[in-house]
Length: 222
Image (cartoon, rainbow, N blue to C red; front, side, top):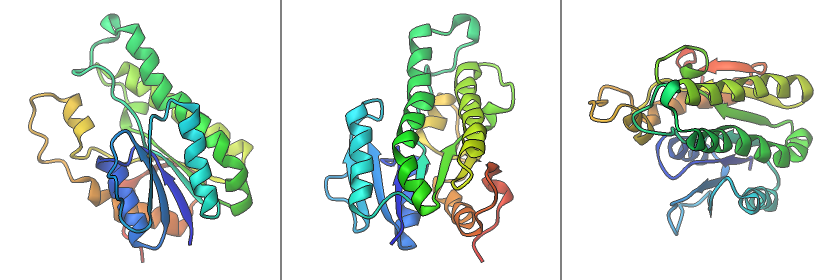
């Protein structure tokens, strides 16, 4: 059975992707600060903080116990202040937090996973956002962090040709983070995270070249 690590899987997109992978025969190691004590079959729960080196090592150890890492989904992230402030007023201590969780921690986990990914011809999925490529007022720090992730992904793909590296933009989804980005607004018109699962599975099935992927451009698996 293939083995995946999905970070930030206690809710939202991460939980939906983890469930979709388990339903299609994967063993999925998940992390999050609040995870169910008795996960369903196929899910290996490793609660913790991705910023901690010991927690990242525990995620890799859990995947290796099941055979190795075939897929790493770097989904965990934080928005920062809510509502998003302009750059002129952005609290710099929170800027460091946003970059630590959204940029530093995923790269640190990827470094640990790479030996196994190389051996197994695996893939890295770095969850991104249109804020990485578009200039939206109030999104300078979050978007800057995601832009950093996208550049790191491009360079990683050049350095690791035996590993697929995809930057995945899932589009706007009805998640708690998205609601935090727009406090007080009705986001019920956004699709649920589960709608991202079929195109995500299509991505894994087709294994296109490394690069930026918009899930809305993919259909469902054949």
